[in-house]
Length: 129
Image (cartoon, rainbow, N blue to C red; front, side, top):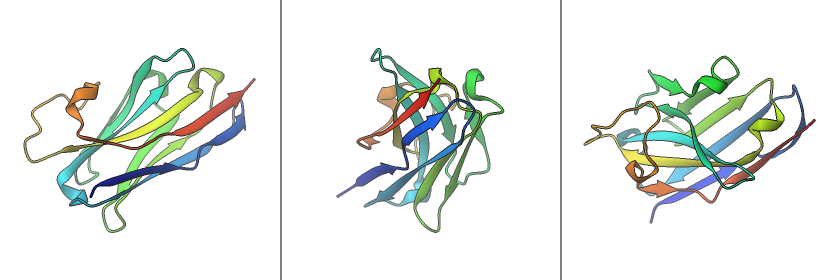
């Protein structure tokens, strides 16, 4: 049984930092592309970042470039999002998602939600102004 569990969300002031984590079990982690998405308070879902199976390459949306860093540790089956210089517009529920890398033919940049087979339950990040 596959489990995807996010953690590390919380309340932070504008300009602050937060690191959210994603623990994955029940699959061969290094066979999977991983991504972070955000569900905004207005219920819009935004792609944030994608990382390839090895962690050697990553892609992020323009609004978080230079502020957010995505990484993974394949020895621990963990996936991370380090968020710096947080803004109130970064508020939302952060979800991690996994997609098989073995047959990945999609774009790593701004992939579709439907490209991912496994999802976590999300972790809330609130940035106060």
